[in-house]
Amino acid sequence: MKNLVIIPTYNEKENVEKMIHKVMSLDINIHCLIVEDNSPDGTAAIVKSLMDQYPEKLHMEERQGKLGLGTAYLHGFRWGLERGYEYICEMDCDFSHNPDDLARLIKACTDGADLAIGSRYCKGGKVSNWPWSRLMLSYFASWYVRMILWIGIKDTTAGFKCYHHTVLEKINFDAVTFKGYAFQICMKYAAKKHGFKIVEVPITFIDREFGTSKMSTGIFKEAIFGVWKMRRLKL
Image 1 (cartoon, rainbow, N blue to C red):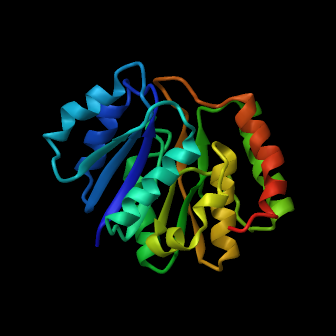
Image 2 (image 1 turned 90 degrees about the vertical axis):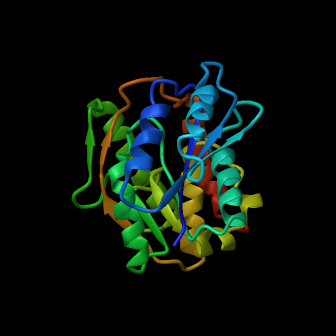
C-alpha cells in the first residue's frame, strides 16, 4: 500500500524542515510531496537540502509563482495518481494539522471510507488558540455551506483529508477552479455527488505559531459566492 501526503508551501521556512522530519518519522509507509510556489524566503532550498536524507520518500514540485492552494493540490493529485499511490492525503505545513493524525485518516479509509476528513466540528473535534470571532466565522461558514449544498458534512472547509485514489480519479479536476476554502468545499461536494463514502475523524486544530496566514478577503468571498456556482458544475 502506497500512501502520499501533499503539502503546499509558500514562505514556510520556519515550519517546513520540522514538518518533513515529523512526517518521515511516522510509523506508516508514507511519502511526502512538497508543492512549492517559488517562495522568496528560501523554503525550496530547505527542502532540497533534505532530499538526500529521504531519497525515496521526499519529493518536491516547484512552480513558477504563488498560484493558489487549490491549484497546488490539483497538481499534487495528478502527480500522485500518475505514480500509483493508493491513499493520497493533504495537509498544511504550519502544524495546524497534527501529522500524527495522518495514521488515523488513512486507517479510516482502509476501514471502508473513500474520503476521511480531519474535522474540527464533529463530535470530539476541537479548535485551539483561535479567537472567538474567528471560531464563530468558521463554524457558521460550514453551516452556510451545508444549507446550500446539503452535503451533511460538519467541517466543510477542512483542509486535512485522506482520499482513496478512486475518488480523485472520478472527479473532473478541470471543473474545480477555486483556489482557497472554496476548493476544499468543492472537492467534498464532488465526492458526495459521486456517491463516495465520507467520514469525519475528530482532530484538534491548532493555530499556526510561525509564519503568516494565507487567509484573505478574496479567499473568503470566493467561498461565500462559490458555493452557489458549485451546484451548476459538472464535477
